[in-house]
Length: 205
Image (cartoon, rainbow, N blue to C red; front, side):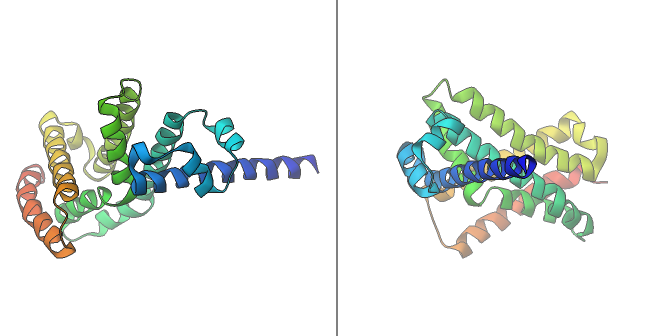
């Protein structure tokens, strides 16, 4: 009986944490970092203020944990789904570039951008955001290592991967300043992709 009770308590704890983390991501995307308050989060999550403070004492604890939670989910998807997709692709380079572009769409990137902006003027948050970004980038390198082996550790190759990531992030940020239609966005991406392909194919023998 006690084992069953303990399991139920653990499940409830996990459910509460997940509700808080998911609600935080929604608030970051919808309201931005400064508009994401703990009051908004607990209302959206449907939990008590006391539960939020118990699991995540401060707002920064909450938002950092939420983005890390989403990043780890995305990393798991890399391994479970995307690796097979790339291994089966006829155009491996093109598929890999499309995959990295897709990673920079949706709530993970948008929530991450809110933390980047907040970290600019918050020295306490800055090292945590930097560590989170290193985790996300490491996941991309890990996927590359599974596909290409030790070539990924070559200094020139790594430099070109960073260049591709920086280009894609810049293009994605442009959408915040100059939002446009999906068709125009895709046109921009295909133009960029064709140039990034030239860089990537130098390393694929």
